[in-house]
Image (cartoon, rainbow, N blue to C red):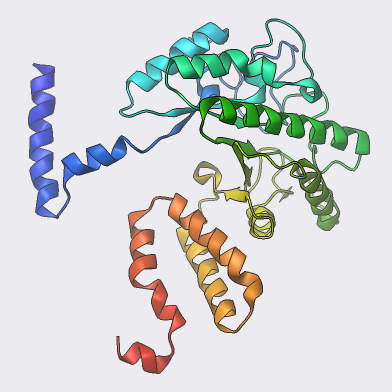
Length: 330
């Protein structure tokens, strides 16, 4: 009875969408080739399996104690498969480093290796679920409010080594699954108090990124993720979107990841479109330095998957490359 009602409702919706030129059957077919990367940490409140007894830090606003959360790696995998069963299509899984299969052993983050994720690789193959990866800078005795931008060279090198090893894990995942593993880098670095010397911390972060990305891999892709601010770090985020966008634009092979779930309410796609317009104006003026930034911004907008933004780019953006006489003939 319930299935019959759902089918009838779909037929009604199908007719209404058809009236405005949308073929819903075609859309459903296309969705089979759209792959989400599910967040493993939603199943256990960002606890992971490090077995270090520490608490959640770095602006992570969870407690790890909600009823029914996964308590071990087997329960986590069961919950992931259950969630995936409700989502049409074939999807990926995004793992944080703290979700390694450490088998009860205490493995510090600058010692993590691909072997700690071999069981995940095998599990992914078994269930036709490809893997993506994240380094983990929070909830560690050396986290504090700064990791890759920490003036303490010992702490900074600890996190550089951690992230290098995470890239090696991502490379092993990508090679094993025959599809590039997307390796996302987000650090919580910032300040709650007003920071006088912001340049200092961004120079440190840039140097850390340069060291991390010095090794080239062929089975993974690098993303750098910004935040407007982190909880407890409201005055300044070292890895701001402007910083990461500029870094990605000048470092081919590194992509700027736009986390729409952490944008400030006043930020929207219009900010990106206006930035793209500025790149076009600079290119028209003969400034080729903005070519890379223009391409990066275009890709960032396309990844938002907003029909209205796509329409604007297809039908309106070209007008900004024309003079008044040319506009008069359009």
